[in-house]
Length: 388
Image (cartoon, rainbow, N blue to C red; front, top):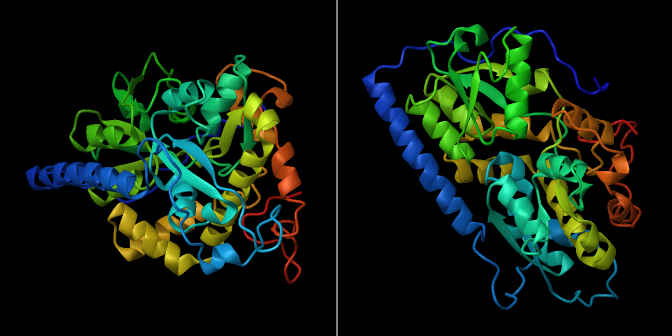
């Protein structure tokens, strides 16, 4: 096993204590399922998750945070020519927050980008990327697996370098062993969530796909709905769905980060786009770095933003924000060893150069506006900066 990939002994159950789910609680759970679906639909509408427009829209005025660093590559105060870019995200969940944030706060517009953030499942997004219908996908784990099997895609920027997926179970499930001959809901049988689930099951002494089945619910909201409705006794969920399930009396039995480090929500694109449209790639990376910086430096605004997007109270939003920001790689340079470890977990192998191309990102990080992202401040490196 790779050094960054480990199968650990099953840790003690974490999260809230189990509570019996009676009819009133289950009715509330069903209401939560409907509210979650409505909130996701609203979030997609507000975040511009429609098909790309036929003509460029007017750029959103940049915020003060967007304007504090100069637009690199432009002459003087002349704004860069507008370019359209389409970014696929597999869900509008917390992992992909910076892309919606960058669009809504004008951080991409500051780089001369008219951005559409479009929600579609990982495999569909990668197919759209290869067909030229998308410019980027944030399904970086799936993109790396596709690259390992010969698809001309590369991870060009990381975002999250540890799993935020959790095994969430019904209150009557006391241990992973209780899931023998039962099913766990995942977003795809070959997804990163499923791989995490298999590690958790294996560490508990069960055989994945033999003792425990993994059933596909194509989107995180559907996995959540299957759990809270009683259709499945367990699901692999990420925030905000894992937190919402806890509020209803379901339990987080195991956390993926205790078993594996993983790459999630980073940007991937095609080899052709890297070579033929490096300026588009560079602008997208700059806008994303701006959004990441805003997320780190503006906790109160981020808490309000998360609370509004996920319909949770501010205290829970603050906990969710702090849990999320601890997983984010500030400069986007996720260690390739983590991606290699994920491939090994999926039974794949490939040279790093066939999976990752950080050439444009490294060039951007040498520009005056971004070169000090991870420079020491008062003798310490900023939060989110990994070891050199």
